[in-house]
Length: 582
Image (cartoon, rainbow, N blue to C red; front, side, top):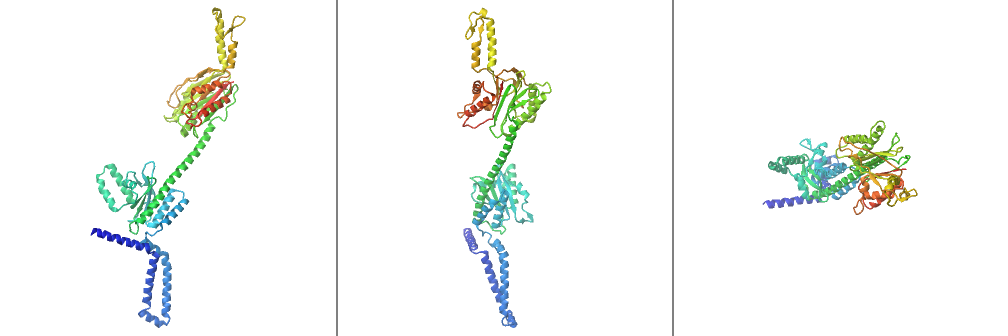
């Protein structure tokens, strides 16, 4: 019997759907108007009403019928304007043009600029077609994995209270581990929810632990607040990116298979809308960051010297090429009031904006302390110690910088420097220094020649019996020097410890001495085989360029490093300075 009743109900439901599919509201209203007109005419032209009309004249019945028809014509016009919508909403709620809805949705989506506008447009189309009392759209939050309500439209009230206030929609969330979320991830069809389902969930909560109990209650509360009766999964590449909740239909009817098919088509469009919106959002964010980086890069370039200063008896040159839009390397030339020239180079830990900010702190600290130190007796070691304290207070424990600073006194030709954990600069000693050193050694040998009858080559004896140094000195004049020292005296990097102590060293320079200070982007530049450029190749460049100007040396190092790493991505900032004594 139960099976028979189910079959009869199914047949009756199908018959009603077929009738609704074939009979339009306009046809139904026209039939009702015709029947009503016929009944009215029969009532008017029969019985005592007809006799009364005959007493008024032989044509009274004609005019009465004409007036009645005109009244019905006016009624028909008013009915077409108002009653058709009422009849369609009450008796034919599922009659809609699915293709037109999809087409209108796609066309209208081109003119909106925000996701909220798009979701409101979707809600309006669904509401007009199915007449539901609530439509809510939940979108996946990529950070938390939960589904946040981004749009909620309420078109009716229940129990005298509005279902959802506009601002409350933002507080409604379906957790990534909620029951309906896990069900929708596995379903290819809409998920129907009845009042009985909430009662079943409530009874099942007694077997849950506290955490699961709270989660299930939040889930049930959210779905009840929006009077959810049908949930649609918004899928994109087998990934649940959103959920659409539909409330009960105002006609009290269930959602038909045609309704569900139309809704799944719209859900597919919503999936593309969500993914495209996120893509556009990422593009807008990337464009914003690109503009900010361009501004930061321009500002950072202004922190570098526009050109090397012209200093009597000294040639200076510098080069910096960041690996990104902004970098953490820094070099500077300072012309001090006491006539000395400052040369600085630094390498900040990290890359990007954070490194650039720390680099600006290093630059500001150096310039302020270098200016202040001219008026007192502070040494370079004290200057760097003060810079260390300033940077330590301005940054976190993960931020630090390597730093090298030197001051050159052109009148005395002495260079004072301190190295705070930076790559040790290379100082190529000139031929003049090697010549003077050799000359001193030969003069010592000449003084002891009387007790040494055999003088080793390449020395020769002159007419007076002394040692001749001319041939060797001529050899020095023809060959560049190969004596290179490293400037390592100093202390630890800046910004790691609140109190750090540094040493300084003063050395005498000679004409032709060549100093190159660099960051590890030079020696750690990789070629296509993964081999580093290395310090030894930099030494060879210095030796072979000993007779060149500072600008020529700068160009030579740049060309050699760039040629070495050709075809590979630059992984670190490339920065160095060149100083040559004239």
